[in-house]
Amino acid sequence: MSLRTCLSITVGMGMLLAATPSFASLSWPTNDPAVQRAVTRCADAAAAAMTDKSATDADLATCTKAVQLARFSGDRAAALSNRSLLHFERANYSAAVEDSKAALQLDQNLVEALVNGGASYLKLRRPGDAEANFSRALALGPENAAKIYFNRAMAREDRGDRNGAYADYARAARLAPQWDQPKQQMDRFTVVRGKPMS
Image (cartoon, rainbow, N blue to C red; front, side):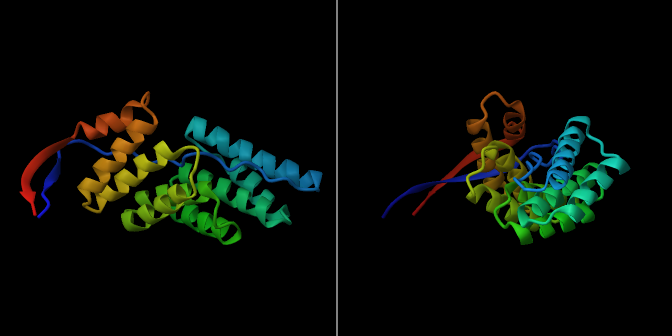
């Protein structure tokens, strides 16, 4: 008979942080300079929107033009993913999800589209869909995994999976030790050691 220690985790009082898209899609190589400029401007608009936490009608028009001009699926996927981020910043979460889905139909491994869609699902109070997007993104071995683990922790917490949420906050804290937000979220939890299970 083997013994295991049962851990029970309870959440203390505190507010969750808002999920944000983790990063803008970079433009993909193309042979057409006009398309390349449009896709690059769209990526620049998305990066600026992330920094400024706002997106203008002109930003959306820039990315819509890039989507319309793009002949290659990689260009179109990047523009759709970036337009998704702009919709997110404008609190149009349904449109952000639709653009993320469209980008993923063109490139199912586009981490940015998975993350942007997941963040939008969180805002739409659809944590199961958000968790699925973040899990798919993490399976691709992204560079910004700490942020994705953090967002998945919020989705898991919204679903009532406190153990999974705590584990993801802890993973984010290990991956980005200088980032305080995961540690602050972990401080809301109380880990209680239960009776050994056989």
